[in-house]
Length: 427
Ligand code: IMP
Ligand code: MG
Image 1 (cartoon, rainbow, N blue to C red):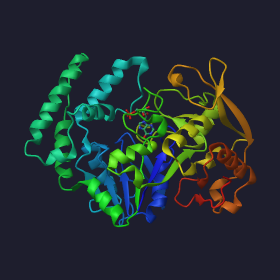
Image 2: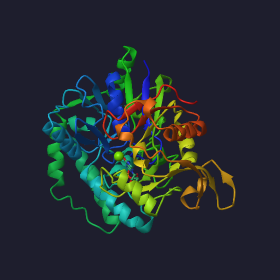
Image 3: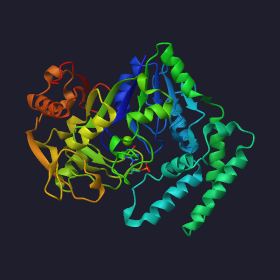
Image 4: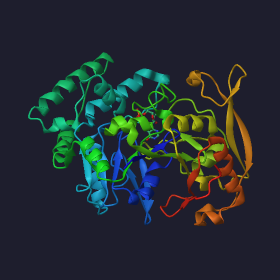
């Protein structure tokens, strides 16, 4: 069988957690392949909201095996809290959760390095979630990092000390001192807990599963425009958030890739710094933020809001080979008489294009919009595609014709139930 992959096409927070949760029952395995506790995947069902950071969104289905893949950077402290929260809600994840021995370990000192590095950037700061993501991936690529498998080694404490000594020197280079307070003790307790869980060679687990006909869903984190190569560099995260990241982050060969679900919001949001051509700095932006409750699920920061941006969506679709689109949070736009869609950019030179310029981070790009009629109907109450208002269908058709990929799911509310599957797409 193939691995289906679900990724965000914008700057993260598209609603990936919800769709994984909805699709999960048809899969045997759900696997995370990159990112770490910078992610916040929100799931809502039976009147309760759950936010997951590192644990795959298939965890609420006991028959599904959930894997934290080798491409993930894992913070044992955050992880332990996450497991405890699940436990408090009656979910025992210890039986259906598997962690790759090759996943990277986030140390308390990585979080200090993240903060010190952001402070040094001043006004040019990335807007990092300060969860230690960048410094941990730096250590991985620099070949000095620690991995989950290392916690099983007799000399783990020594390896830890050696790495923290390196970090101390870096922090001192920035003119600060490394003070970890009680975090080291909490870290070692969390590592002790990790040792009791299923630490595996997940590349074998996944490939064995594929060979025996099992279905695997890979769950992306962040979004394509935050990808370290193709995102709005340097305002990106430190991992490959694209479909290609699932190959290296799980040990799956490209020929095993099946469906690619591209998740996007009916509008656009971004947290942190960096370019955002369709950003609305006026009351319309405030209205979207309020209606969509657009505040970070990891950091609580207000998210920047704007209209949907087709050039960047086309780019993400191209890079990922998206086969199906899932449009999220359309209900948030219900109150608007008209809705704008950015179809092209006007560059500083006057050139009009639907491609992303290399100088995206420095050049002011002016969005060119088409305006569509709003639907002004409360979509939350709608439970069949047939009942969708005409203006809403027109909006989806307009997007499909530009993007040339069918929208197979339209999500019109946060609950599992507000998920409409479309058979008849217009492309
Ligand atoms: P970092 O990944 O914490 O280093 O943050 C780098 C950039 O990616 C910042 O702009 C963050 O706000 C953004 N970012 C990281 N993770 C997420 C996410 O899961 N959703 C949305 N933005 C994210
Ligand atoms: Mg999120």
